[in-house]
Length: 337
Image (tube, rainbow, N blue to C red; front, side):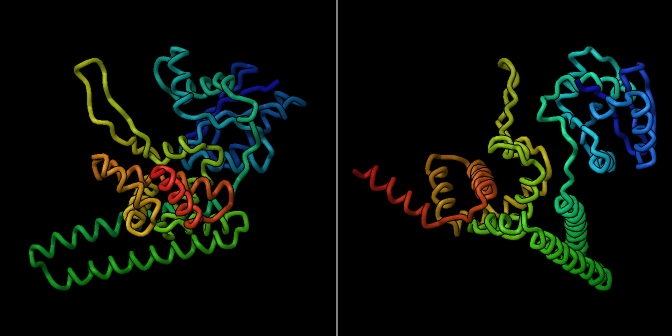
């Protein structure tokens, strides 16, 4: 029997609901606060403390410290999907929103957990380091783009040459740092026997370079249990349709959920792949021949890259161009017969 403790995580505090005594607590979002909570639970549940499950939403970096503490202390956790907890709150007719209310709702939402979803967090240190460096890389890219746009604006005005030179130096500095970060990430991957070969397998797809391979590897590590359809959705490439009756009807668009880093890296790979990868080139041309818009065809290629890369990652095999060409020729001969 499990005992579900609701933990609502914010930047500086955690709000906790303990159902045993209908108790609300607030602790620091720090190791000190987690230790105090764990000690309190040990006193309340005694021998049953091993069956206490901490229920929380892994929605931001604020929950990372909590997750590491639970991993170190072998505490059972249920990381509930934010959408599931939101739907559960509506089903409970919860009115208003506050941290104590959310903590109580999370405690009750523990009943939604399947047995396989309750576990001690397994911290993947390679994935953690990759995430930190990728976040910094994205920040640098954003700053470089902003600086480049500002430089172009000033160049059109024929501004001061010293200022233009300084901005160009900043852009060059950003590019050098970006290159350095990619090299650091590749070194981290190369030193991890679990992921180094899988990274090379993903890169074996013609058109997929270092940045796209890093993005795909990080996506697969972050969501290890996701199937093909789910991994496409987590990259934000799943279609979303808005229609209701006869008055609301718009074009189907991609959801753009998840990190933009995945989509931008995949877009560049798709542009290269349709030129140099026979399988993806034929796939792309077939869509265009069927009167699909170029944007739709490009998104379809991005999805196909994810699906191929996911299969290579799961099976730990490299991309086999010759096997594809053989299948293609067999299908061509069969259709001609």
